[in-house]
Amino acid sequence: MDHENLDAYRVAIEFLVLSVQLLEEIPKERRELRLQLERAAMSIPLNIAEGAGKPSPADRARYHGIARGSAMECAALLDVSRIMGVVQSKDVEQGKRLLSRLAAMLTRMCR
Image (cartoon, rainbow, N blue to C red):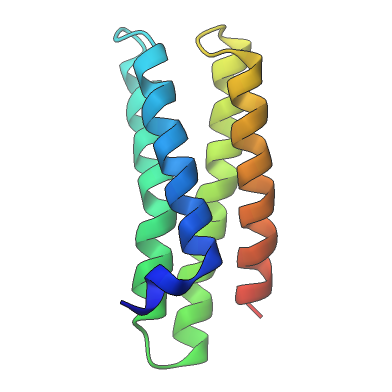
């Protein structure tokens, strides 16, 4: 599959793995936060893959833009999680490093 050769896809999967680990830390009673992080983290690699399958550059850029938006949403969710005291700062920083790298790649892919 073409998307599996993309560095952005690999980083998105790496972030998804970290997100799954973070979801285990977030208390079950924070259901909305857990669902939102899970949804946004899954959206990134899914949109990269879907974009890779589109025939036109404009279609690919649209899906990569959606993936970039989901990465930004994840960064905000990490901030919220830290403020709420449900995840450790070191995990937030690791996630934000991955997301920053990913957002830069996706920005280039949107052009």
